[in-house]
Length: 206
Length: 206
DNA sequence: ACCACAGTGGACCTGCCAGTCCAGAAAACT
DNA sequence: AGTTTTCTGGACTGGCAGGTCCACTGTGGT
Image 1 (tube, rainbow over the protein chains, first blue to last red):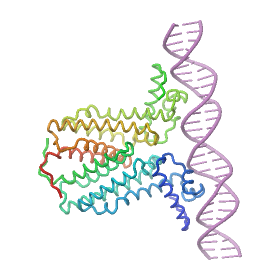
Image 2 (cartoon, rainbow over the protein chains, first blue to last red):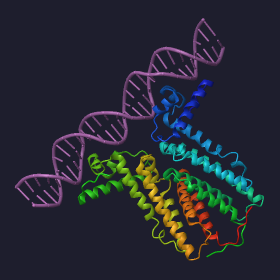
Image 3 (tube, chains in turn green, red, purple, cyan):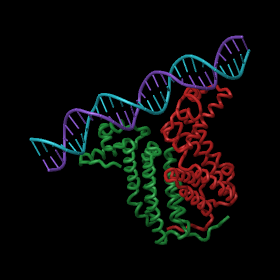
Image 4 (cartoon, helix red, strand yellow):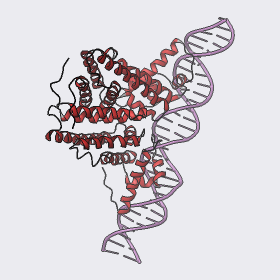
């Protein structure tokens, strides 16, 4: 990560490039974006792009990925950080579904991952996002247990991991099939599990 | 889909190209594969590639995607088509986890999707795979209900959809983080739900 | 034997796209 | 004001990769 000296104007331009690229990534013809596309969209020049992102395409895309990763969690606020009641969980669930329903088949981070391929930094951005996300859910589950609304037999780590995987999969299926029902199905089933598990009597076993 | 006349030798070569490409896709440096890579790996020439795949890269990759999609379901047999006991479900679960644990971070179909981008055919291959997969699981759940091992209150459509989403997500998280625990968590949680839901007494509601 | 057509090899072409370079405008600092 | 640094524009390059072409070699049919 090379540090570049920036004035206020410079910072603004840099941000314009990132957000312009991100906006384009949200569009339909996002696969195979070129630096020239971004240059045209953001009204900049090659010189500027390489001035602000000395590592070129990879550096720029990484910055965009970080920007988008931030949005993912922001879009779930304020629900995500206050999962202390069933109503809150429902609102959170709805906000997730609404966000991805609106996003539809296009998935900025997905495209970015495809574009960045196997660069080390890209996977790190996703890993960080997922682990933050998971820990918020984990905290929510524990809070519900503390207040007695969820039974102690629920494993918060396992369920939060399951939720993360479920959401990721729901979104990916949405990308392939255009249907949000998978995302809803997995979320509702897991939340149903959270509601019922550990409260009923001894489980029946086969 | 242009039909090309093929002799036995021709068919063998065509297949060699597909399987060679598929093998390479399973490797680590699979992102950004070029036709020259495939040419080198399979010991063929540009002429042959375009002879057997007149639509070029896209046609070839589509054929590889179909080939790989077939493997996905095959690898789960014979368990997938006989989900009539808890033992069978467990074996299926284990085969899925084992398959993706072995696959690790590399995911041929994932790379293919990134490479093919937004071509209509690619999404169709995935859609078809997912819907076949889902209908097998659906059948399995219904079978368990018919034999009284699963309660009638379980919605087979919703749970099979949830399983599909969960697996997809588990695999994707595996690609990003290298950890299979997410896949295991979501599978186990959903199967746990299948086991317990609808057998216990009336659910407690908040 | 022949002929038509499938199979094979590889040289070649062409467009694209990341990345370079430099010159000039604008700002910041003294 | 002067100078140093940042900001901006755009022409240019170099290589890569998808795709074309054509000559040559097998192979199967009659």
